[in-house]
Amino acid sequence: MTATAERTVLLAAAVSVVLLLVAGLSAAFLSAE
Figure: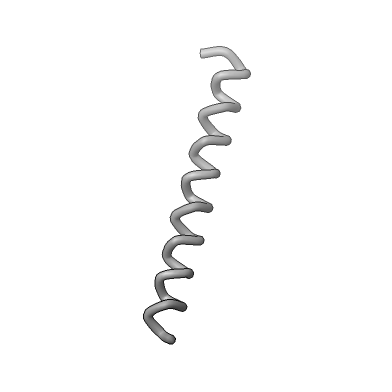
């Protein structure tokens, strides 16, 4: 695996984690309202 591919995989993983966190927080706020 090249360095560019490895960086892309890490970036994709980070983005997916952030999206999961945002989705969880928004769901918590919506259910709390």
